[in-house]
Image (cartoon, rainbow, N blue to C red; front, top):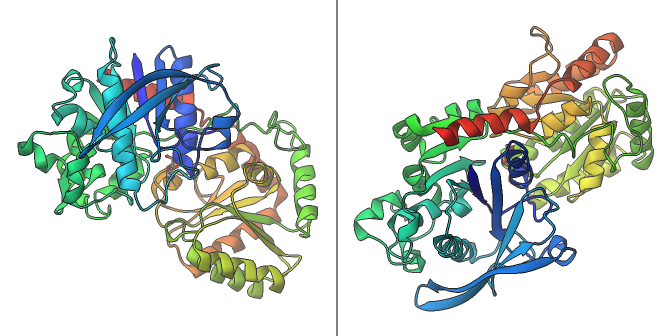
Length: 468
Ligand code: GLC
């Protein structure tokens, strides 16, 4: 099958979160399984653009409200990612350094989707599937079916994958002037609660919808920022498919970003990684090392982290270390870095996004904390498991689908129910006690490192939906 993935992010070209990791890996494994999978995304000005060679694939004009915009599609020439990568350059709109966060994001992503539809309409052999990811590409299925400019696209099957239903891309109907002339009777297919809602539109227009875990799909029917009845109504075409992880990038036996390699059979390197990490941040090597990696936002329950950590440090002083890596809400950043001065030697918070340090933390840590309020899939807990780091997670979404509590049969992780200071504090207590029971800890480590979260299985699940 020929599949075209349409996304705002794709690792290593541009990444803001887990969406980038997924779109950077899934097509590679689909190609390995015998498909032709390609990716098209906006041409963000990231280092990848400057450090690689591209050829011009297509040039045309697109109608954008009252104006016509020139756009160019360039293609990475070496196929080094394991799939054809196409970047859409719309001067002044897509060529920015950040993926999101501009006041004209709605216009930028509408223009990107028009460019993709215009380009696709010109293909001689059409792809079998157009696979859209998250709301930035949510209006494309509507455009393909209801805009007069793209008659060739109406019968192509479309899949929409929801990586995060909290963000839906709402915009005022005044922005509909930017969408190429469309059948007025179909207005309802773009709309939710009086606004243009790209996520709702994609759910209505796509052939099938997938979410990145089964539990998240069930949760969306009860809690999805207003779209709950839509999920109930469209449930017949919605499926949950758990993400995989790229086992080639995330392999403690070969990872070029860590200094001491190890595997389930020979764990010696893990202790050496921990030693280095603790030395770097002035932490006590003999104590359990608990890490948090991620965006410092409410969705990840980062706002309660400072209180949860302080409560634990006051009550169980000298029993554990914490190392935090992330960026986000300035208030949370400030509160987390304040603790650096108070508990030097037992705590460190490093602000920012740092891929190398993240790998070193998974490799050197004993426990990974993920108290997320919402976690559609979560990749960090799977990276942690692959590196023998015990996940301490809230029972939600993909966390619930991938982590079994150590109190249950063959359990290898720690789960709690509520994103609260007391649940986190209690769970850290459980982590400290299992750390002191080395036989149990080593069994858990060994067991989780042998669990298969590779893309090969996930690719088969997608294949079944495509064939359907
Ligand atoms: C989003 C979700 C995360 C998921 C990722 C990849 O970032 O918040 O849970 O793992 O997308 O699908």
